[in-house]
Image 1 (cartoon, rainbow, N blue to C red):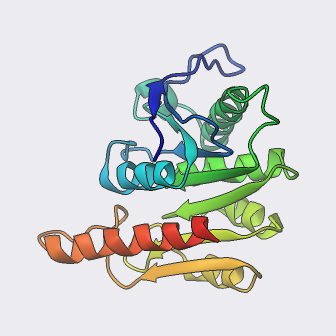
Image 2: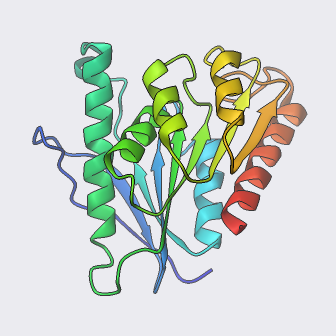
Length: 222
């Protein structure tokens, strides 16, 4: 892995609000990854922390969105307004990250890694930029959200899906629709909560983490 420079991009969403972020940049990177966190699952937590470093090892620049969506202002919004806020933050972040390579023809591949509500942001990006070279990674997707499933079904390219049958956000009906699409890679765990953890079973939790990272590695290696 090349020397990594860790900074942040100046990102402001359409409402004029700053979008907190962390940007890992490598010399001559031709791939970009945008990491979109969950409500109570930050980029410092195991799944996203190790996934970020795996993406770096595979030569990606990585932009982590670090906005805290637990604050009262966001929580007071309606569901549709929350989705629009998530989407606008994601669009602004993607645009800011892409300008990091203005003189080199841009990025040849863009990975979108969304966790939980971050999969709403991911769905928004797929709908807004259908022609960009995305490879989405849906981590514990909110399959009970019809708009998310519709965006996923409209996407024509390859994708990776990671979920657990014990996760309260998992919905078999949505999963069945998605697995019928071509070019979808799938990891459905038998055990694990929304964080893909098993309380009081550290070894099984670590086995889940390993399975997730292997699935991501296989996806980004192809």
